[in-house]
Amino acid sequence: DAGVIQSPRHEVTEMGQEVTLRCKPISGHNSLFWYRQTMMRGLELLIYFNNNVPIDDSGMPEDRFSAKMPNASFSTLKIQPSEPRDSAVYFCASSYRPGRLNSKFRDNEKLFFGSGTQLSVL
Amino acid sequence: GENVEQHPSTLSVQEGDSAVIKCTYSDSASNYFPWYKQELGKGPQLIIDIRSNVGEKKDQRIAVTLNKTAKHFSLHITETQPEDSAVYFCAALGGYNTNAGKSTFGDGTTLTVKP
Image (cartoon, rainbow over all chains, first blue to last red; front, side, top):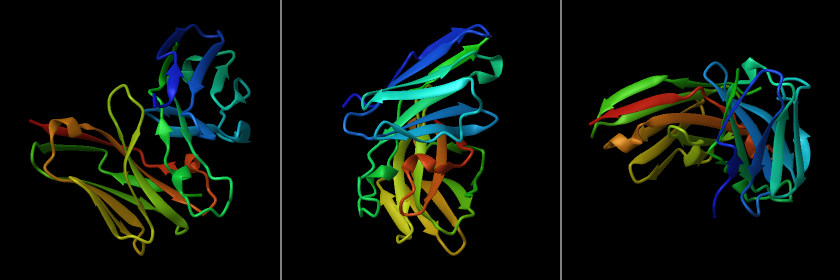
């Protein structure tokens, strides 16, 4: 398996521009997460999807951020307009969550991260 | 909510020595404790995990211990090698139905192994 694939690896843009980050989760995984990593705030969960449906977006910093998951193999995180304080490494991660809520199988606990997108907003 | 504290923030050891990283958590309902290793330019990778019904788990040179009463858990790396140099994150996850992505992460420990 190729693992979680993110693109681009690096993105440099100017303040005010739209930025779109892309993620392909591991095939068969049904949960997808977007994280942001900075020195000041560490790893922050922005939003996560289960079976392509957004479950919790309470970590999305503001309306400039939006995320979509049109199908099980693709997700995007968009920032419009971008600001210098959005500069960070953005990670996508996926896991498998069993359908039964009280399942004995805890594989949903194992997160698999992509290599991240280093975003610099000038 | 859960709060995870991790110490130390940086750790430097000589090759061959042992390294210990400690984490404490606040939510007694947390029952799953993974450790992630993040190398430069890469995403975090799960290296070992432990559940609340187990006190210790070992995988070759890596071991994790858990003290539920004291609410702390530790990562032990023996016979360290230069390739162990990385940032290590602990995390805590609570509730039987809680999704993995809601794990609370520590702030990370930068481990440097000097050859």
